[in-house]
Image 1 (cartoon, rainbow, N blue to C red):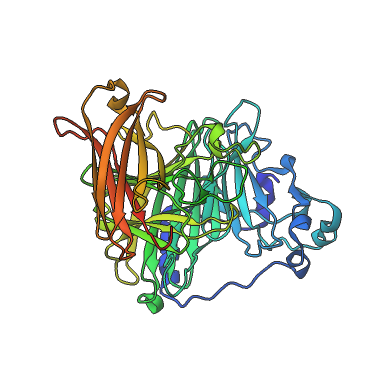
Image 2 (tube, one colour):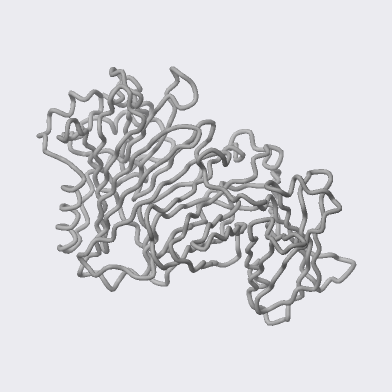
Length: 504
């Protein structure tokens, strides 16, 4: 499909301000769910049949242009039954890109479903390609598909966790609401473009929104987000929790898990921890877990400097999965632009029986929201990367490299034991004879029985080893640990963990 194909639809003046005006006008009206434009033949496709529909690379938008990006589109069908409109923006004017069956290859049982499809049906999403890893090879860069979900890649990474435009009432008692990107606008890039600009219109029963994305590929792929969200007057009291910059990932089991399923692999996860840089400058690390019941942790803060879901374990030996390549799943760091005020970073951990479910959600929840009809404006940068470094925010001190827990079956069997290994920073230069203290605290429900710190000569890391004694109340226990030197200075970030004797 070429840009000329969009000429079948009228061209309109477009900019981000006009998109905000449209979102504000929508917020003043009751929400009406758009009717599905997907024919019944596509609805009946099963998983295998749907996979027999493939986009033809030679029809990619801008494939014949000397520009650094190309764009393909996803076909509706199977479970992808919500279609979106996609527009190309050239010199400030937007034109609709019509659906065309000629752009797709229909094989097997899908052939019959590909006939007589209307040009106004729309697509189920879009995919952007870039020569990310090697000149002349067009690799995936970013995908927008389903509700307000999107995923991006950095150089050398494989798809893993996802981001969303907005999360509403995640893990709330009344059920979660999933706002949807109903329409997209993509600016045609110039020959020397470093990034690609995308806009999206959000709609849902509770909110509308205008989003602007600037996507810059590289060793660290950067997505700069400007969002303007409006609460619908009719639903202003309905949505209780707004999740800003939500990240969604998967954690089945790992070193920190209290139990291990009967699986060949040592670890299975897209992310292994939540990293948080607070407004006061403290760095926190919360290892992820697969609980037996829903777990929600909140970290109150003011003007946070950043947070993200990290995949710190990069050694293939710890996953042993050639196909899934979990060691190449990206980390994502959210860096606020401007002051975000008071609120909290929330971590939601849901139980999952396997690796097919995204059971981890992290987001910023502001303490107050503007009145209905007034804009909530928020800007942030998303860093997608494999290895921290360069312009990627990271603690300047030692970081947690692994967490292990268990108990002894022969000595002090009433205690729960933890090993927290730290590496990097100044720790690597410290000799085994240096005086290093493990500072461990436990909240209500347990006491710290003993704690120590020693250098591991086999890995050049330092291990905090400690044990807690539960008081029998069954209360979840908040644990914190960091290493400090003999002058009282912190040598590491703070390890934060919620140990629940009932659900872990």
